Image (cartoon, rainbow, N blue to C red; front, side, top):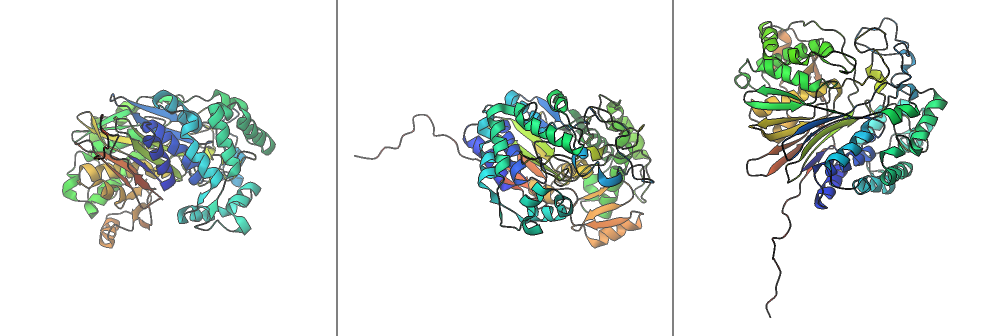
Length: 535
């Protein structure tokens, strides 16, 4: 089973499974394919968090998140005067658009490490679909066209991006064919020479040359010295289930565990899905998590992260005791990390027991919104996630990894994985993953229903509610003190797989992206089977 946010990426993964590869082979093929067909979301100069469960039952998290360049300084950007503490905007948008916004990448290294450690196929083989899509082209979807249009003002300032994505000054139309020959050549170079083509080789030289000419900070040493970190996951317990997710610098494992601990003290099923009581409770629990997020999140190499305290049942009891089911409350907290909402996710499982759920991104829509000359690559804008003011928890420091809400999570019963899921959406990722888990565990939803069900999100000031929640409920929630804002979507397209007792699987993607779940059934002929015609 392969579930991604684009049909061609899902097809790339299925191609690997059909060729005899395992889930990791398929996932890496999907990741490379997504860099072609979702160039607004993911790229080789980006960040990745992968959650891998092997057939032996072991779990590992591969942290390939982007990091501050070694030339980074706490005062390298000029904050917008008078901006609120949680707002990281800088003068001239230098930390959001252009070369100064680019952080040291880890995606390519993480994908290659996953393939080398846990896969069975050669890098050149799993990259073939991506190379084909880049050189031969693919059909632009309405979703991609709308994303180009949303970023058009910035993309137009870059000659290469404008020529590729804004022909004639307008965004590529749905149905147009997008060919990326230069990027296909870059992928072919990586297929032949491995990750060293970017991290120390000719592609890296072009990146560094671009940075030096335009005032960017990523250096050759940033590319050659970066290391993927293998981390042990966070494990929480909820109503007899074990929830397994990524640890810091990801905020997701910590806060999903924390929120489930708080919810465990309520009859969530009895409150019902999409009711005023249910929405209010979710909103208050989300606010609690975001109030604690600053002290519970960060790069553990730079910040002491109190994981045990935040994820303890006792701490949940303390927070739950202050919760009022009749009225919205304000919850104290510190700085909130700013994250781009434009990410992509995929979930893959093979028939041998290997499962991978992985999120990857260039942060904002089209990242730093330019193309590295000679490579076709769109780099990240991860520097916008750091506080441009010195002396704070999320201030810039050389080598510091970005805090992320990426939530590639799995839910287990009696040691057996039942659900694997994740999604894009910046700070809205882990609250949406939480809601999917609650939908499945408490509300008994089918997988497709849980993935597509209306979501809510808040970190305090405004409660965003998708239009699928009834107007009467929105009115009742507002009466309890929430400032309600109706949204077309909260976070992005979720990809999930359910594992049934009989060994079959169900895959689900949702309407919030170009998602596609594809499956490979049947199998090889039984030994000794022959087709014989009568004589």
